[in-house]
Image (cartoon, rainbow, N blue to C red; front, side, top):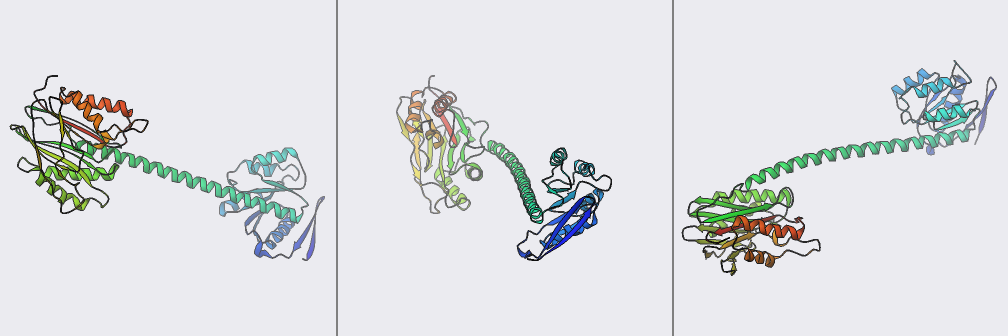
Length: 421
């Protein structure tokens, strides 16, 4: 290493600088703005910093500092507090620091030829990171600059990350609000797909409950009145929850309503529904489905159960049976086939159709409500009309699960008139 000494005399301040031959490949490259009203000090500081690999821009007045900061970015400001107006108080430099927003996030190192605790405190309050006494020690000066530049970069990175995180959070909130609005609209659309009022035929009474576990769901039920003597009842459960299941549910509803009719047997309807829905349902999804066609005059119900929870038929004397005839679930295989069933109805009979959101509902201990408990309730309250029986069952389920539903839940009760409440 070679050292050439430059001696500068300004009043009583003597500055000794060593120009050092450096390997600048390892230096911290940064852009530094140097401000001092002494040209010789600017010259020597510029030479020192450039020898250490820094890019340097020099100015000699507070106004020039602000102009330089407006024109380009710097990694550090190395400035004297005293200028031509006053060489002892530092007031001009302090006023500059206190009156401008241009120093935001910019590391500042102040050079002074004197020391004052009050001035130092005020300067620190205005964002000054460190002080260097004139005459300076080269190694200490360069270490101070290096530390301040690195701290400034860390602060900028932290603020940039904070700003990016805040922007991402804001975008996420906007997307969440938009999604909530879309889901609410989807919920309203799906509510319109299920019957707002249950059609009735003379001699029978039907009541229904439908509740998606989320805003929308995959449970489906329908009561289709074809005439005063013909009624279609169906209930289904599309695997999954949320919007994907709701989309399949709406497709299923459109398909059923498109094919169902008083002359269409349940077995034929299910074949058509399976054929139509199969291309629209993914390999990991399927549909459990029950459809019954009521001949009101003959009190006869033809039905097909496609893998759904077998409904209960509870008779007036307390006996019961389950409607199991049918075939496999829908939308799983192309060559779907079934066996159609038929039951005779009598006054006082209650047909209970449900999805597993009712029977698999759990209490806080994790115990399921179960099919047997549902059947016991239906038998116990079989004398009630459907519009009274349904809320009685739901009250028991809600008491059991503390009104916390972990799956879409649907309950449909069809009753034959002739019971005494």
